[in-house]
Length: 360
Image (cartoon, rainbow, N blue to C red; front, side):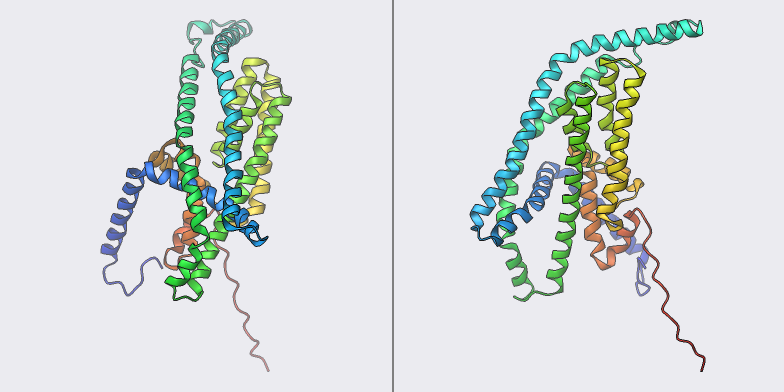
């Protein structure tokens, strides 16, 4: 039951809960400049924590283990940034050529339709079916947002380093708060952290594999900027369903611009569809299990909410953020019903206990 029967004022309690929810939502929106880097740093720290603890178990001093983990994550950021920056520079140089090619393609498509149908479709339809200026503006805005994010990368890595240093002493703080003895609350906290690590670890590995395969596919299909297309597929794989569609859009658009044939277009789109179906609908659900899944409606709503609250990067982190919230709710007795609503499947019906045979 959401509200216990002993509650004499369920309406007042509901209003109080809604008021608290408004305060929390406003706080998330108002403090986005602080909470967004902290959330990203927390995800990185959770991913790097098993590496640091593993090095400590092998006898490496805590400070060196933390430094090594920090350098590994920093190297990953530097590699992605180096590859993406070169691709962005080349893309800006090629944009004008792509605009001209788009205009030529649209004119040729309209002319071909007029020849086949003997209907002056060009008199009724403008050639700006795909507005090149709008494409250039969209790409320019995207590049500007990426550049602004790079300026906050140092802050994110700095917060992550402090989180990793606190991770070594945080369990002792919890034991002190609980009375210097591990108890159910500590086990509960460890369970939550373990489930978050499982989700983020699986999601990151699957996203890396998706980006690598689709980047290779773009190279095989002779598309420009295969490295950039692979990075886009890696990042947007954190957003199920919608992310795969958005990641495929630049590739199929490049296919039309560079090759201009329906066969090549369909082949590129088919490759993206097969990879996203295989990883997103088969491999990833089997690795995560039913408990680490969200319904499609919740995915869409979380994308809208976190995008509204924290901008484009919030939309990118929408599903991991919602999954973390869901895991916490699952492990909180009086809020578990919300986690059931967020899940992609109904909870299993408990089997009826065996009734002993009353016969003699």
